[in-house]
Image 1 (cartoon, one colour):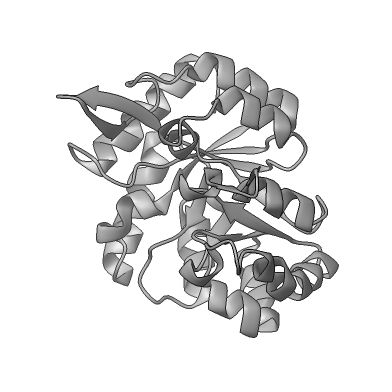
Image 2: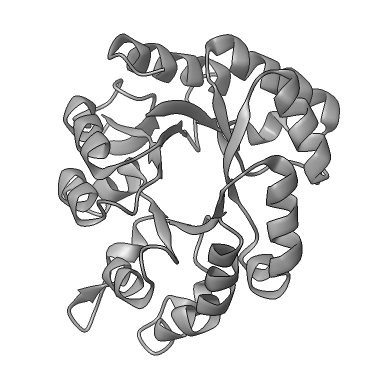
Length: 251
């Protein structure tokens, strides 16, 4: 499994080309080899590819507008071809689908682009938050997604922090999604004054040595470090996570 940086962590430093260039250099200097594209300014795919190539960083996953995936699938695929990126991600389920009387429409709408993406040799990915662990008629929303798409139509970017926030067992969900987790988000959770906060990997309370072994068994390829909110510099947080994971033997 290869370490990567989810650039949403650095979104405030990636809104123009100069800042993006500097940020990528810092990510590469930390030691990361791969990145996820998310939360950036509006850059052409070729600019992203050229700047990532400049620092030896491979784009392995994106979070792409769900509307574009649905209505501009061909151009989305072409842009990912330019970036050399296999995994096309939905970062957040549009709110209209998150209700018992409309949840089934997500698969009805996204099966066609998922199959078009599959035919191109890529894979549509879905990233969870906590609301996917709400039950609808006894089934988690995440279960509904699993049952509605074949494994080669939809993969899952399991986010360790949000599974824990939902009160679910991270290890159990890694096992349940085995074979469908090529890219995952590593994010820790710490408690300060009775409030949950995001933390660098292995600086909080999650059992990452256990979960990393489970991800290996599940066939995960890319371990993407993400921290949406940082109590110190996001560059410092990314380095702490990298150093902690490097000490366990991950690169």
